[in-house]
Image 1 (cartoon, rainbow, N blue to C red):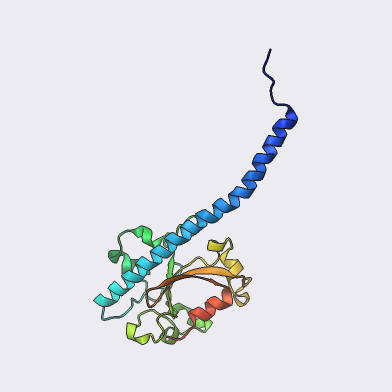
Image 2: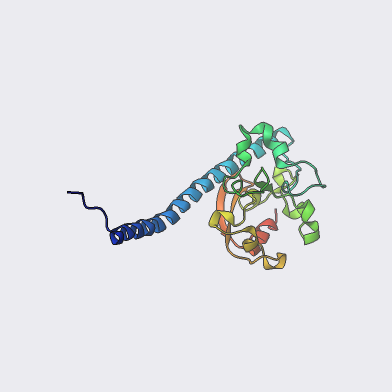
Length: 204
């Protein structure tokens, strides 16, 4: 006697159950994967913060003068990677795993609060930026961003365009910014585009 096989309806039921379970599990797996990436990003920022202080100790207690990010040039022609690379263990510290997984993104993921190139948009590095300042200039170091992941929305499943302020052509949605502050502590801040502008422009 031949063993009884699965009927078509039974196979369809099993397939439907597997698809349902996959639909329930995959979002959780995606969140867990992004949580691990964010933890790596924050660890990178903590190491970059330490490197910033090491740089300052060797340069008259002054932070480096470097471009905002590798998307900018012409003001200093030096990037944060150039200034800090000798002070960190590996180039991987400059790479956020969330941002570098996006095709076409620049190899180094972290931006520096240099506002020299942003003067045309109303920012003033002398009173708001971190670039080139002596550490003694900062009256509220725990509130002033210094280095941050140039990844405004991707840690929470959005694009940068979703998060940018409406005045800059964005949608001003609440994204997330992984940030190292001047006092060296790191945090992941849930904030929209207007809030990011407020952080950038906060006084020293």
